[in-house]
Length: 68
Figure 1 (cartoon, helix red, strand yellow):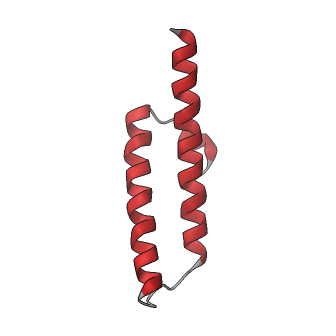
Figure 2 (tube, helix red, strand yellow):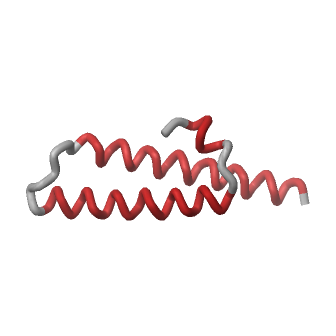
């Protein structure tokens, strides 16, 4: 998922995507704990995606409050 795709989403879509990513991270950490994780690099990628989504959410929130 790249930043351009994320910036095109609405706030509700971003919040839904954030929830999905957090759930995926939880599942990946669980798989890591029971030694069934195939690609441990996926954890880092999901964390970065979460950070990207949270950054865009914050940008949209601050730009909305600036306009009001």
